[in-house]
Structure formats: structure tokens, C-alpha cells
Length: 392
Image (tube, rainbow, N blue to C red; front, side, top):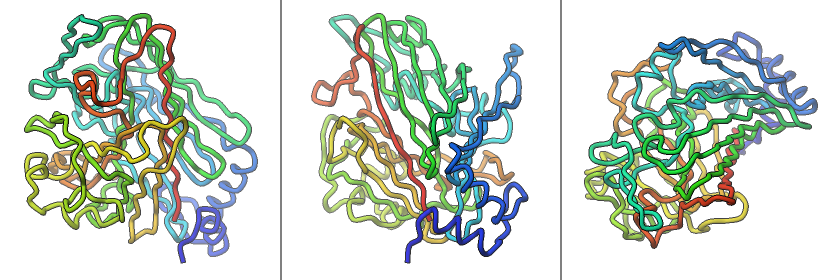
């Protein structure tokens, strides 16, 4: 029988199983989690994580509530670690990342980062808005990826901790000036990370502009529910509520087609192990070296988050359910992890050791009128919400 979060925590407390990462017992961890659920979680804690070359300080914020432990960097709005218990109450960090600032600054994998101004790719780094052409920073061959060479993942955000009722969280603020990475308009961005009393992690995005622009914010956490550094995610079971996806060209730019998943390796509607069809030889998989595509969610754009994906690790029993108001989901199977990167556990990451599930508008939407629009105008507020719910 599948156990829910509260059952797992209570069972761990009764059994007194040893917790791993922080050297505490599961009994004390469970007791703390129970106290957090009733008191609104622990107040966010800030510590120095490192300094950039120009002396700018980067802080790490720690949050804990409802059995979930989250660590966030002011650099890039990065999720440095996210710990949840397995079916026996044993904690593990289930997000890929580094243990030092220099690795994040030098890295190109976007581990855990807040992505902007524009998540995913824009063809040739160009788009036209209201008759005016704009040239963006190009950092992925001839294309612009995740906001360009110095996207939001490279910025030091202003961070403010908060507690509100039974919730605990962080408000992150960043102002992107007119022309930054080629984007028009000054964009004022606020991203809120909230841990609820049952351990759910919610991301709220808000942005306003003083000139017409395009925006598509997302988060780039790599998941391994068995624990980062433990090996492949190919045995993870994934379900995606999408009957179509957007095929791409050799540069991973959508062709404009909304293709059916029926009869292809891209059909995750009934749920299946990630690795079952990953080597099926479909032309789209061959050029992407696995899965690196946008799924067209059946629900479309919605006023509030709706469930769209479930990820489960059969070994640990850990589950992740994702709800969003966005119309697309980029599923990336960690195709370019090559064994040269050392993670927080001290182990190296190889191909398929983590996967991303990025809620978003479709890639290259500014150049595809048939895709849902990503245009933001003065007087409007960009709003988006994604909820991650954990269980075992």
C-alpha cells in the first residue's frame, strides 16, 4: 500500500530509524516536522555561501516545513538542495547541484536555477514585436537559450524570508534593465518560494514591464528521487498528461508542428519508466540524444494550477506530483551530463543521472503566432504558479 507523507513521518518516528544527511534520528526529524506543520515551519535561516570575483556576497537560505528541507542561493535563485524522506522516513537530497559557488558560476547545466527572461530556446536569438526586430544574446549555437549568456540564473537576487500562517518561504526580487541580453523594457521580477505545512513546494512568478516585451519564467531543477549521485533515473516512472508534443529541428527549435504522442516513445499518458523507450531510435530522440522536448499539456493555459505530471522512484517510494497553470512541460532526460561534473554528494553525474520537468510556455513562442503568447505589455502583470507535492 502506498503511504502518504504524514504516515511516513509518523512511522519513522515510531521506528526510530536513523536519518542520514544531517546526523539526526528519524524520531527527532519526524517530531520536528510535526511541530513545523502546526507552527508554520522554521523561520528561514541565512548564511554566507561564498563571494563572486567582484566581492559580491552570495547567501544560502534554508527552509524547513512539513518534512521538506529546501536550500536556496541568492545567486541565480538556485535550488541548491531539496531533501525529502523515503517510505522509511530516511532523508535524501533529490536535486542535483554543487557544494560550492565557483562551480555554479562556471557551470552550463543550470542546476536548480531560476530561468529568465525567457525559459528555453528562441531561434537565432531573434524575434519581432510590434514591427520592431530584437536581437538577443546567443549562447546555444545560433540560438538563445534560457535568457542568454547572462540570464537570470547568473544574477544575485534580493532575497527576503517570511513566515505566513502555516507557510514559510522566500521572496526573491530582480530588476532586469531595458536592453539586458537584448530584451526590450525594464522587467521587474518577483519569485516566491513557499513550503506549505504538508511539505509542498510552490513557486509563484510575477513580472511587470515598462515596454512591450516577452517573458517565460521557469525553474531548472534536476530531479533524482533516489537521491542525487545515486545513479540513473531511467527506472523512475513518469506520467505526463499530454497527447501532443512539439517536434524540433537539429537545433532543438520547434518546427511548429503539434505532433501526436500516440504510437511513439513520447507517450507518457499511462505512465512508464523513463528508460523503457529512451533508446527506441525515434529520429527526434536521436538528434536530442534522448528526451529534450516540450509536451503540449492537454489542459492548456488555466487560471489555477492543475495536475499534469507524476514522477515516482520505485526503489525509495518517493513521489513528485506537479501542478501548473502553464500550457507546456519541457521534459529533459539529462542527456548531456557527461561524467565531468561533481555534485553535492562528491559523486560525478553521468548521462541520465537526473531529469528536468520545466513548466513553461512553448519554446520559440515569440516566433510562432500559433503558440500561446508570451508577450507582456505595460499595465499587465505576468503571473504563473507551479506546485510540487512530495510523498512516499
